[in-house]
Structures are given as C-alpha cells and as structure tokens.
Amino acid sequence: MAHHIAQEAIEKAIAADPALLSPEKSPRDRLEKLLIEPLRELAYVWEDKVGMSIILDALDEGTASGLHHIGPFISLLVRLIRDESVPIHNIIITSRVWPSIRAAMRSHALGDLVKIVQVEDYDSHEDIGHFFRDGFDRIYDEFDLPTVCPKPWPAPDDLTTLSERANGRFIFAATILRFIRQDEPYNRLPLVCSMLRGNVEEVWGDVHHLYASIIDGIESLHRDDGLKYLSVVVNLAEPLSPSDLRRLFGVDVRALLLPFSALVSIPAPESPDMPIQTYHNSLRDFLHDWHIRKMAVALLGTYPSLRCHKSEDKRRVRQDAAGFVTS
Image (cartoon, rainbow, N blue to C red; front, top):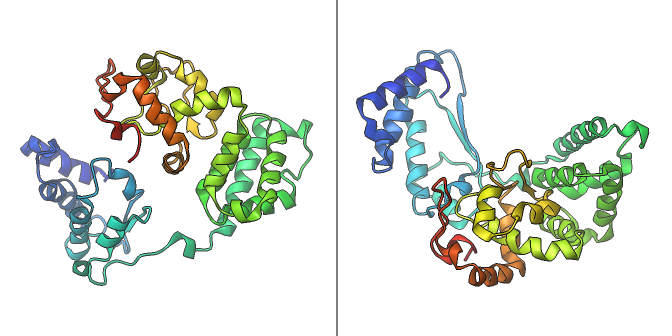
C-alpha cells in the first residue's frame, strides 16, 4: 500500500470519514475503505501484472486481545480474492498452528480457496545453510577473526552439524548466530557444536533445548536473579524500556538481563527509552513451560504494583496476573 495512488485513496477516505481510524468503526468498513477501495484504484496500474500477492506475517502474534476475531478477519480477507475488481490473486499468511487459527482456515465457507502448507513439509535445509554461511561471514569480518581463526570458519563439519540440527528452522539458526555473535565467537562456536553433538535426540531441531542450553551456560550467580525478571518481562502486556523497568521493579533490570542478551534484544545504555523485547515469541512459550513460571508468580506477590502500573509515558501493564504470567 506504499504506492502513491493507494496512499492518496487512503488519505481521501480518512478525510471524508475520520472515524475510520477509530477502533469503534467496524472492521468491515475499515477493510472496504482503507484496503479494498485503494486496491481497486491500483487495478489500472497493475493491469499488466499477474499474481500480485499480499503477505501477512505472524497472524498468531496479533491475538493479544483474544482469538475471537481470527475467523471474521480471515473471512474478510477472502473477499479480496473473490472480488474480481481487486487485483490480488494470492494472500499468504504465516502463523503458528493454533487450534482456533487452524479451524478458521479449514472453515467450509472458505471452500477450496485456502491451502494449508506446513513449514516442516518444505525442505529448507539448503536455505538454512546459506543463512548460516552469510551470518558467519559477517561475524568473521566483524570480529576480525583472520588473526585468530584461519578459514574455512566454521569448519565444514561444524557448519554441517549446525545446518542439520536446525532442521529447517530459521529461528533456531538465528538464535545460534545471535548467541555466537555476543562475544568471543571463536570460543562460543565449538561450545554450541559440542552441545548439539552431545545429545542428538533432544537437540535435533528443538529451539527450546537451545534456549535451555544458553540459560544453563550463564553463571548461577547471575542466572537466578535474571530469570525472575526475564520470565515477567516477556509476558508484559507491552514491552517496556530499561528506564520504565527500573521504575517498575526498583532495580536495574537491564544489568540483570544482559547475560540473556542472546535471547532478548536489550538496547544500548545510550538508548534507555528503547524497549527490551524478545527476538521471538517462542521464548515466552518456553519460559511458560519451564519451572521459571513459578518464580514469576512469586515475584508478583513481591511487587503488588505489577498488577496495575503506569509508566510516565502512559504505557499500562495488564491489571491482573494474566498480563505477566501466561495462563
């Protein structure tokens, strides 16, 4: 929708009806005025183009207010395919396969318009290999490793091990690269490869085992306190900055979370107002399943203000424990 013709149509619609920006306006009206009609305007521009597509990434991450709107939302998207005046031939949606999302996709009302493709069914091993190779080349140059490690780096056997254990999952590969890039990559790489070769049945393509291995590798003196705050931070209704978290907890949470920087994005000291965020929601799922959840519950009792906290910039944390610990 970055095309200037589409933007003009959107601006004209909002000028005629400012309520389109209000959540009180029905999703159907907003879809019609802010998406369908602008796309119709583009039909004349794209008349010689075939196979124009819309890509919606991580549908499951747009469910903070619940899952009840997933079915109606998908039904609205189907209108784009069925409306011949709209120059869209495909809508590609990525998501974790939650039961409610799967049910919506398999609704009889959608007929044969929907095709579900499991990522596991796509052989991405070659792509993962290229992803690793590019990532390690960047690390090699960034840390000036020619003075420490001669090429090839990683060794072919190590690169093969990493690619195989990723089992086609980019989140696994990305987490590995972030962990190795943190410090002394020439030492971290053999540690990771040793971990992956140590218990093949457990680590094969399992990012949760990698999370556990990274956490277990943190000194216990720093790990225990940091995990208490990490388990709460990943479940906040909205990500907060280090300065907000200091006001919330009364301690320097950023310093406590630094050992976990392979798992969460921690802003530099000169950017205290940037939020601390997880690289991927699978970390929240992992911590939910792990015993750390009990620590988060205990922490809620220690900090009653967590039940209703308002930072200076008016960001709110959920008012009940569900906002901090996934039920």
